[in-house]
Image 1 (cartoon, rainbow, N blue to C red):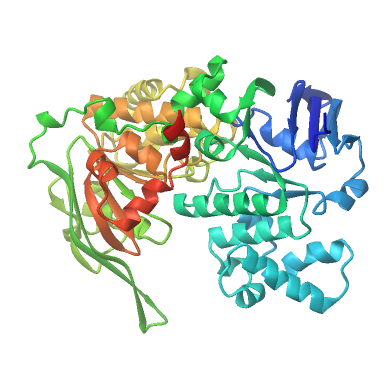
Image 2: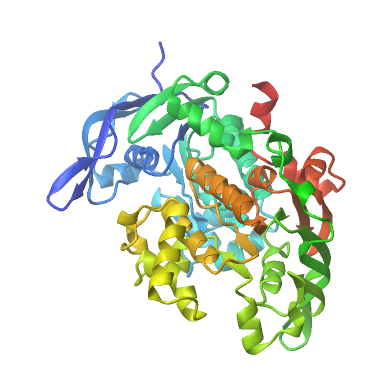
Length: 541
């Protein structure tokens, strides 16, 4: 029997808290064979990133390996010093980190950063390094690699930055690449291109991949084997196709049930929405021929939104989808009154918002509320949960202190936040709990319309499922209208009744979600749908 490329044996990792160490992984064991893709799957706190950090010797200063072994080509590297790891990082093991923006040095050119890995491992000839840098940037699919080498990270898109990190990771043709959530922050089509690139490089070079992801759809499509982690323990492991077809653990079954990308049906097909009781004439949102131009340097005009029109019936959910730069954010800002369109008409609950200014506009915003993508940055860190939700009532002079307390407590209970959390501050909450606070704050003024801007994109799949369920229940209870902005078409398919697809500021398709997904008319829409992770698995499971 041949020796595995990587063998993790009964790994236990602990972090120091105050004056004691607490274990976060317990007896984790798995192998990775040459050329194989093994996915570590689980929610935040499951131990998957900690395990990956231990493999490449990058545990935080307060972390340590309590017991177990990590064998690379049969040699135990688990107790190696940082200096010994430096000799193999890049050459034998490489890392593709999650966030390309924070992983690249903003004051160094792209070429200098790709070339650095070559210098670290002994290459001294500047001409050789320069030629190899251009070769690597071309290899990862960057157009005009000579130009890219001279540029700084801020001049590149998210997908381009991730390709730069991949170029660094493959520079020395390592035996193993650890890909830690390599596409979680990317548009669905860019995500697909990056994953295709990693697959192509793996096939060309025989490099194995340890894929760390919370997206079971990605794991299902790309992995040969899947290891499911929960609470630092392996719940289940096996061949990807077999595990997906017949998961043995309750936790794996829950992950599968919660993964939008592994559900083929649309909202209407699975759970009919009571649209029939809503008169067609009752549009909560009406956008007609929306145009928004931005002016640069006083002369140049950039058209971010070009003649977009859609209507959203009261009590339903309309999704706006498209890649970065498609015009989603500009459209939403105009709808909520934060931006002023160049031309066109926006009507919210029968009111033309272009006619509103000053105090009238401020008062009107009670009818339309916004839930942001990142609840942590949108919540005041100095305030308690109770105060955050109460503040809009204070700002608009709603109710006395007793009335406010009654309303806030009832709403916090409704969104699933127990009384024990209400005097905590945002930093003491989980991501899902913070998003529940943001939703409660948006609802406390009893709005008619709620705009959700990538409101679940940063959440683990099970937490995401809980928030989506909560949003659906609140909509049915309160007759809310949602404008749901997302790059995740799997989620859009699950939650939305109608959809508008934007590309480069233009609306290329709009209509009922079931129809658009079943029979897309635009090649771009087809490309977006085809890029949803998990498609391959649905075809075989």
